Image (cartoon, rainbow, N blue to C red; front, side):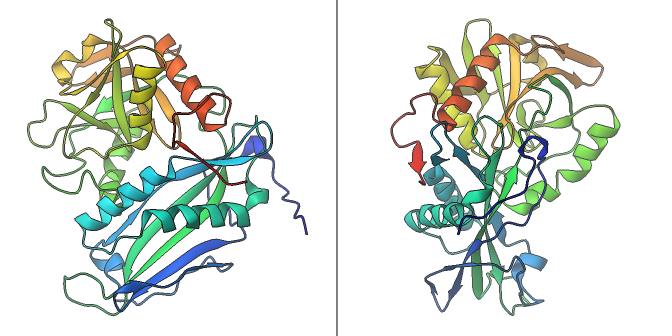
Length: 341
């Protein structure tokens, strides 16, 4: 029976909405079970779970998109699966296989198909896979058992009034330690960012930008997103560092810049003292795709890029091209799209 979902797709924000089904699989005695879809959105775990005390957990974020012809598709879920494996290896959790990860995503989307927003609304179905250490454990050691799960939430477009530049400030805090867990998508990195974000907002900025933790001389990440800049020489430049989370959106934009927009693409140090080399700048990630950066405050200096009020032309082309690929309006590189229906 077709279900009628009573939602105002145009007013959706980025907030939790309980949908009908989520996927769950449990790891015990050295292996994952077969997994299943369940209706209960509550987890019952041991009070001694390592996820609660020692932060042994990781997560991912990806979206399902409705195309013009009504089909549903996922964008590069294999990359999320591989990044989760890297995160698991970093904090000693069992890998959840790539093929099973993608299949679980498809199951969740199909089971919650009526929550996939219509084409043209700018809204999408956001998927949150996560893997946590559970079971009775007191010492600082890997958990005896694990849970892998995926839930889905319909979310609105990140920019309600259309994409517009916002300003950022350089933070005095470090997001991650040198040779730490910066490249893993673990909750501790995000917990460490909450205070820095709050202070940036209190100072009148959208978020903060972190410098490299070793020398505090190079731009690394923008809050919970990756940084990129556009030079006057038509280069797409993004920081290179072992403590940066490898953003799937960023690497997709790098491919688009080179192969769709005929730009040069460079991963390298981005010295904060040379930030004025960029004529456009942005932050990129799953939620917003691209957040254009109007200006950056560093100590007593405030550097404006293209404009504090208008999106730069290259940033706009990057955004439009990636979004077009995600919703099926532009041909995607081979392997980027997984059809759900």
